[in-house]
Image: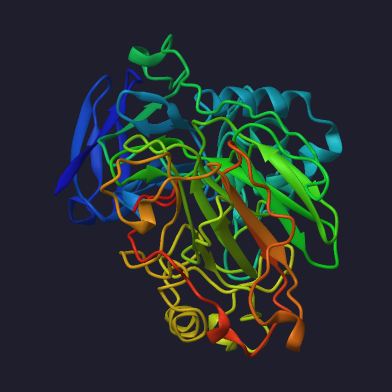
Length: 480
């Protein structure tokens, strides 16, 4: 299947663009006020790059129908600039990337810069006879230019080299590569003036998130109230955990959220918190905000049965063990609590930007492609029956449904409380750890999951972990 990339030149003059990945890699010349349509097959990647006096400038980098069935795109000034450009999904202005007045902001910053800054930028900032900037060279080649551009465009366009080749990149740049909403046509706009698409200037901004209320409780002595999860940090260090509500949810699909965590909470070593969440929450929780990371995916209330569902995913990497269980007394549980990082082959490793050891993505993202060594290692040490490794089906769904009709089977039996537990545990050794033990299980009518985040101290007893449910996932995660 294919979609269309509309390249719209809003200026009153002709503009040339390089096309990489489509149109047989041939340049296009788009007349003033005209639009050029480019056929882009699903799964393809490429770039639309504006040329200025033969020099590459701003570019829209696009992947069609990428991870999770979503488009990925950004607006980059890494190789230069000489005009204004935006990129978005058609009729979805909230997905827009780019600064529609980049050159105007650049000129304003130039005219207000001190002499030292101007002198350092002389080799890479090109101007006309009135000292107005006409274009800049590749930002990647001039560190002082990157610093300068960040003063007015940070968080609006891709400026630095990003998380690539061992570099952690800049968080604001990395966020530019977030997913769109599904797989649709793409609109690229160019202008010497304001490049905001005219049809979307007054379009309302879509609100993605409902901020949940967080309640801290000692779950050994107080019963949590309302829907949410019990989050356990079973490690020897204080940890931060980020919750990501999906951008959108469909029938078996979801728009994974990579750039707007809400909330981010801190859990002390060997402590637990009850995290209250709205029933509309469908997404994940992970350690911190960086990838690669192990995802605990869950939804509070499924649209078809009203029940909570969850699983563990290693598709976007693994930074340690995580387990998930229902708190309704059914014993449904999944994930793992042993260390698979320490002895992992180096070919499977992709450290986080902060240097934390982690296993690479198994499906690919904007930082790298699928890592076969990580796939092989996780299949050996964890297995698809305990966590999603390469997508598909077969991963047990930890379900905590609302009371079903009498004809339903055991794995859909009535829930006592509608809660699940998540635990980040270090695990214990030898005779103390014959099975995964969930202490102080809360049993009431609201909490859905218990999630354990585990440092993985428990080693060599993988076969002791028993998954219960053998159904396909109905989690809130990566669009399965």
